[in-house]
Length: 348
Image (cartoon, rainbow, N blue to C red):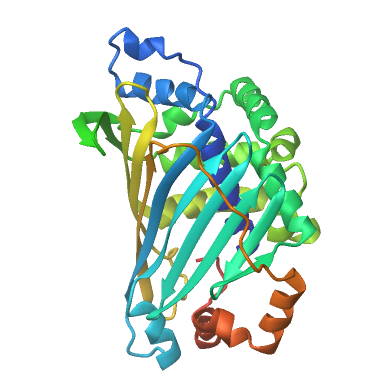
């Protein structure tokens, strides 16, 4: 099976989950009527998110490797001995459009810091503490990604027509209790995703041309992940459904939902990724994944100022060509250390 096909399925699944947060059918009245079932709380959260016009918060993703390093080259050992993490903060407001994002990637004891600022349709990128103007095509893609309201309405209609309800992707959703998150009373929900059902729904949606036009109107995702001969066939999709269901283990999700406004306050996910049976992994036995995202009440209007002394994007391209290790040292080391090592023939 093509590796790009598996990646594409994961990307589309994430897009669907994000879009589904604005596709609930239940109204806020479900909680006002004292229906505190987990399904009612999630449905009210989906509905409440439709009015969300701004967001601030933080996120963190950490990967910890279970590996036998006895036969690994030194370059590869450096990247499995320590967790790999991606963390950051974000702020966004819809009208007038503005965003401020900071991301830190840590691996092999080194870090890469990336920043992004958005004001209306103007975008800037930051690397090594220097700001650069983003290219026009990147600005256009970013603008399209935030102009979602029409697509969300279309997605909501299509999911209903196809009988897809993301709430049913939890096979044991339960109300753990009530807790305080940043001073706000919240419901704490927990459950395990039903991967077989989720993957079946996602695979079915990926075979819908109408769905792909909604989540990827510009074709950017399908082109970047592999189009034409590399695009997943129906057989590929079926294989991905089976393989991913086998690879993702011990998958649990916890959600905290505000009692007063039904807005999502925090979400965490824990899972293990194990190699498919018979796959050659070069000593890698599994990967433990921990992810979290927290949303906070905006403290006043988000104000984003254009970065001072931003250089043209061409300067960034030139600098990366002249000294790529300065910008991507850890990543280049990873690719060099793992190049051709333990890749096998599958998609793990």
